[in-house]
Amino acid sequence: MMALSDKLDSQFDQLVENCMKSGAIDLNLYQEYDVKRGLRDSNGSGVLTGLTEISDVCAYDIDEGVKKPAQGRLYYQGYDVKDLVGTGLDKRYAFEQTTYLLLFGRLPSREQLAVFSEIICSLQELSGQFVRDVIMKKPSANLMNALQKSVLTLYSYDSNPDDISVPNVLRQSLQLVSKLPLISVYSYFAYRHFHDFQSLVIKPALKEYSTAENILHMLRPDGEFSKLEARVLDAALVLHAEHGGGNNSTFTNHVVTSSGTDTYSAVAASIASLKGPRHGGANLKVLHMMNDLKEHCGLDADRGTVREYLMKLLDGKAFDGSGLIYGMGHAVYTLSDPREVILKGYAEKLAQTKGMEEEYALYDLVEQEARDLLSNRSQTAKPICANVDFYSGLIYTMLNIPEELFTPLFAISRISGWSAHRLEELVNKGKIIRPAYKYVGHHREFPKM
Ligand code: COA
Image 1 (tube, rainbow, N blue to C red):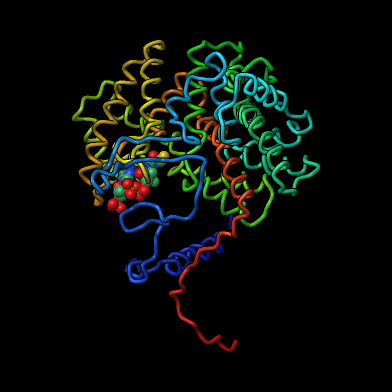
Image 2 (cartoon, rainbow, N blue to C red):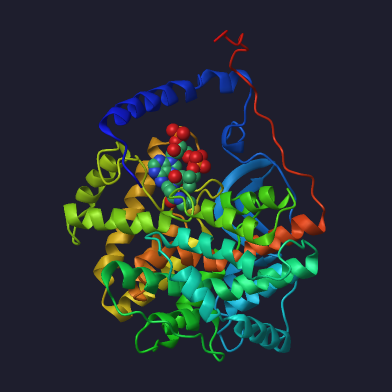
C-alpha cells in the first residue's frame, strides 16, 4: 500500500481521532434500551434466533426445574459426537460419514458411505489453470484470506453459480467440501515458495485416501503417515464439522444466505468470520500464547510460575495485551467442551508416541490454572472451561502440520456444517435476517455551506 505524505499523515491522525470519538456510544444506553449486545440475554446465553435439526449444543442439566451447569454434550442430527469419532469404513472416513449425516440427516450404510467417499474423492481436484491463475497469484500470509479469495473465484469457474435451488447448492457444497483441503495445502506451499523460496510442491490427492489421509499425504514430502496420525486428524475434522446455528461463522452463513446470494459468497463470508481470533483463529493464538509462555517461563515451568504468567495475561500485560487466555471460555459450554475432552485424550496419546510428554504436561497445567483463575475472576456465575481450540494446535504440531494451516483446517471441516445450515435455510425459505439498531444520535439541521 502507498504511504501517505507527512502532511497527509498528520491529517489522517486527526481523522482517526474523530473516528474514535464519533464511534463511541455510552454503554449505559445498552441497558436503558435493553439491547441484547452480542445477541445475548442478560445471563449471557444467546438470543433465540432460529430453529435447527442439524445439531444440539448442550451445557446445562435441568434438576427439579433448576438449570445447572453440566459437562458439555454435542449431538449431530441426534447422535452424540463422541460416538462418531473413530467410526466410518474400517475406522477411516469418519469425517466423510459425518458430512453425509449433516447433509442428509441420516447415517449412511456401508455402501452409501463408500459411494459418498468416492464422490468426494472424484471431486478432489483443481484445474492447472485455477492453481496457476488463482492460488499462485500473490499468495497471502494468512491462508484464511487465500481461502476466501479462492472460494470467491470458484464462482467464475462455475457454469451455474447463482442458481440457489437445492440440487445446485448441494452440488456446489460437495465441490467445496472436496476442494477446500487442496486449496488450503496448495496455498500454503505457494506462500512458502514465494515468501521463503522453498520448493513448490503440488501433489494431487489420491483416490484411495480419505480427506484426512490426503491432507497428510499432500503435506509431507514422502507422503507417508501412520494409522494413528490419520485417525487423529480424521477425529479432529469430525469434531470441528458442526456447532449449531448460533456460532459466529454459521450464523454469518444464515444471514448471508437469507439475502438470496450465491454459495461462494456465503461460504467466503463464513471463512471471514472463522478467521477471527475469538472464533476459529483462536487455535493459532493458543500456539503463539504457549510459545510466549515457554519463552518466558520455560517448558518445565512450575504451577506458581504458570499462574503468575496467566495473571499477567489477564491483566493485558503479557503476550498480545488482549487480556484473553486463548483456548479458554465458551459462549455456551460451562463445565466442559466435549470436543476439547476428546482432543485432549488424543493429544496425550500422540505426545507419548512423539516424545512430547513434557509439552503436553505444560498444556495440561495451563488448562488447570486458567480454568481456576477465570472462574474466580468472571463477573458471571458461569464456570469457564477449555474449548476445542486449546489442544487442537498441539495436535496439529505433533502431526507436523504447519501453523499457517491450523485455522484453514477448521474451515476444511466446518464447510460441512455451513453447507448443511445453508441448505436448511434454503429448504425452509427463511425470511431475510434483519434485526434492528436503535438510533441514539441527534437529528441535525444541515448547515448552509
Ligand atoms: N480470557 C479472559 N477472559 C475471558 C475468557 C478468556 N479466555 N473467556 C471468558 N472471559 C471473560 C469474559 O470476557 C467475560 O467477562 P465479563 O464477565 O467481565 O464480561 C466473562 O469471562 C464471561 O464470559 P462468557 O460470557 O462466558 O464468554 P463470552 O461468550 O463473552 O465469550 C469467548 C466467549 C469464546 C469469545 C471467550 O471465552 C474468549 O474470548 N475466549 C478466548 C478466545 C477463544 O478461545 N475462542 C475460541 C472459542 S471456541
